[in-house]
Length: 520
Image (cartoon, rainbow, N blue to C red; front, side, top):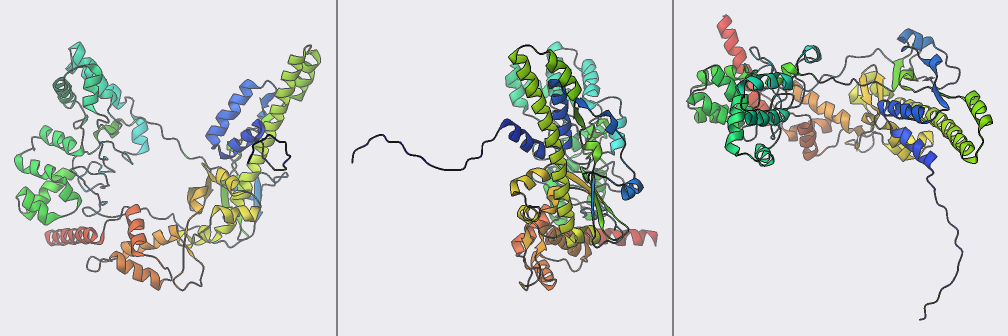
């Protein structure tokens, strides 16, 4: 078979992604903050664009929204549906390590789970991860923003006095740079020693000096070390307390019998030690929390109407308003002499027109998608999360005659404010779990999670539900779900196993009886 060149013609379709089309696609997936930054860049780059000052106004009140009439149909759409009074927001996850406390999980002496404030606690919150970092809510936002001095500045000021040697001060500065907001060392000190070319022993010595700084417990590498520093400062770190610190894993598992054997004390003394431990501060640096929290600004508002429907409108405060200054273009283009100048002005005009058109199309698309989501999730808005429908991107895309990728971009980083709270648009897209009889409508995975939590919250200390029993109860409610799926959802909600919950609730019942006996 010989090879020879030849010519042939083929017909085919191909999508050419022009720069304008790529820009329009990017605008769809931008959040309101990213969009504002992009528009500001375009205003600086394009002389034919300018702000629409006439559209700068404050957010309308609910009363004004309910009676407003937007002539162009962009700011609001209304449709009729079932509506009732808004119920209270869904309760957050709850549990107990001790009475009135949230369960924690401890691995290798560290607590990556949660533990809530006790009667004498100064703020047990979400504790450190295995690498020593801490995340989650600590002090209130008001407390975090009211401090005049950051934790880093506070430590540097003390290091200037405690480390007079220049090399030690340099090492201390690097260590302080590794301290996170909660006061823990977030990094490898051996890597720091190699980077600075000093002995690890000197790093440890400087670290020991910094660990004597205020607040007590700062610059610790693990939770156990943080608690140890605070106990030493209170002159309460004796061999018995040291054994308790070394066995934090048993405390996190609520395995009190094994903890008593490891510590070597009776039940009453162990309870006193645990109470003392809970009075310590697991996040000593949070009192200096100084990080500004960026609030979520909704892109869409959903409000109930008097006729039993829902009013859907865009948040006009997040929509950039730009105009094309055609008068300026006419003046400048009339004075342009060269072809390059005329070409530049024409490119600017086309780019400005395309941006204005893209912003308008983006707003209309977001509103169209949000309206369809509200249509699909009317029962959720009316009755609560247990009535959340399982829908996917294709469901919405087919209804509004758009591509799934467009709906995916529109729902990314976009938020909607509803009577039940602020949610990301992607929250309403959940997987489906089939009904037990195979005939009724499928259930949303989020709704199933909520029902699992309801069952666990309602259980009694003498009748703790195992995962198998939860499966049986859900089947009685018409939900066909596997045991491993129940376990996955339960762990995702940070709810401990039935064995640990039984220990927790028995401990709570014992404490209640002790309190009742003391009052009697």
